[in-house]
Length: 129
Image (cartoon, rainbow, N blue to C red):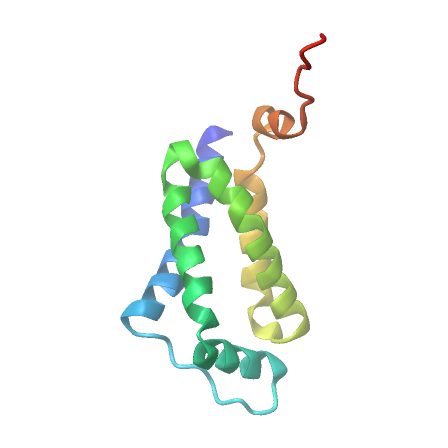
């Protein structure tokens, strides 16, 4: 199962690094806003400067996913971003929904470490115990 999690982490990191990093090198051209709310939102994010924070967080999470020591934390940090990507594509721009769902599945596979998940919700021993 560990090899599957490593493969899932690498596959999840690839789009994060490619799309996040390419924004700083040469941003992908956005399609014209032809009445689509999703495309209009992407234009507003890019012109308003929000894309810098979003893409930087994707690049950081992508790099952390590739490092074994930080992989689990990176998947935890990436999970809300992935859910946001799925929600965006489900409600605003349906073209990317299949890829977003694959990213959510990969994120879930990386997080499928029962010992670490139990450690997150385990009750800390109290001093009176």
